[in-house]
Amino acid sequence: MALDVYVGSLTNYYARAAVERNPDHLLPAILTWRSGLSERLGDTIAGTLDWDETPGAPHFKGRLGWGGFAALVLWAAYAEHPGLGRASLLPDDWEHDPALARSNAEGFRSRYSHLVGNVELWLPSDFPLTFESEGVGGHRIVIGSVPLLGRQLADLNDATWKADDAAVKEWVRRSPSDEAPLELRARHGFAALMEAVRQAARYRLPMKLDY
Image (cartoon, rainbow, N blue to C red; front, side, top):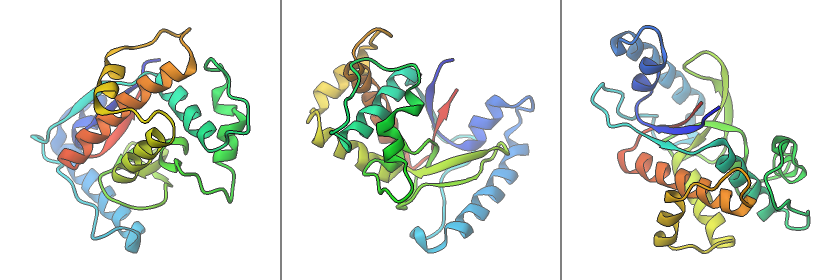
């Protein structure tokens, strides 16, 4: 199964995914969902949730790939649990990795919570904690913050690779094979996700894993 990362209005995203493709039918439901979510977040955000949900809002899609995303998640987990032995290749059962389990353990405050915490949707508002809620599509999802994810990705880079913009641009152009070392796949995942974060921050739009 492919994994992309989408940046744009949720109206456009769900109009493309639904049988009924008229965004006019979706917009009121999404605005109601956003308003309820804003009330729930309350004082944890400055102001209310707000972004462009009009049909003309810009949108982007980047190829992230499950391998790149999974490798990046594990790279972050091992960065904060260096005492554990990191595999050189991406394991098939990466979702049950011991370092990832520790990063998500109750009571542990992960430095990379908006990356390792099973987040599916990031909103263009600054708030500290991820949370689970009903998504627009009706199923439960974990929601995070675009600005905080960006800071956590930058922190991960500073703590491990210390790569400059030129290196990151090179990483996004080269998609490693499934047999490539975990670090190379993590670098590609980092570059693809960081590019999406930059677009989401620039246009102040949501960002969503698309699979």
